[in-house]
Image (cartoon, rainbow, N blue to C red; front, side, top):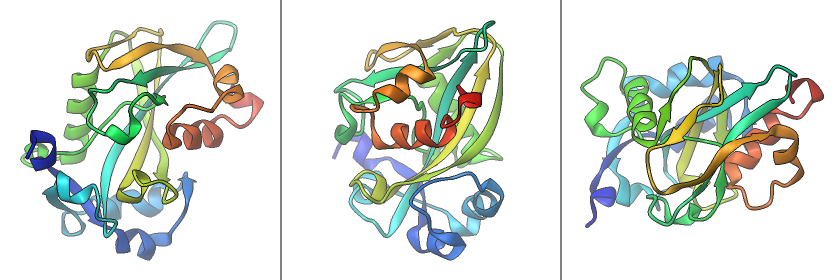
Length: 208
């Protein structure tokens, strides 16, 4: 068994999402979901290799978008392509605008395992060479894909002062800040979570 498969990751029972209010796609209603999802009595750490094919549980994933607005007001978002070496094989070669990953049992000793897991994943994957303001903006649930059936995304936007984000991993490829208008014109080739986020968060001209 590989280290990825044997890793214990933070999950919630899928029934909890249904109890709180089921949705497909994007929900901006953070207050309705997040506190309950992160309560210790509602979470557990289970072997990732088993969770990847068990829709009775949802693996909680921080999903961070880096956004920049230039002096002319044009909004761009950090985009990359997932290489074949990244853990989730079903997403290989897909474009993405989200950085993040699983909350691991190694984060469980911290006061806030979720925040620690997000910090650790970001530190492993990218170098943030700029000031930024961060906020949580919504959740993603996508039961229309095999990957989505076993994951629940928590979406964060980091508004960066300058577009200075660099990959730390070789499998984060073809990186760069791309104007939102350009991304929306060609969503083909993006992983489903990125398509959902881009459509939900940047659907009006004011967001672009």
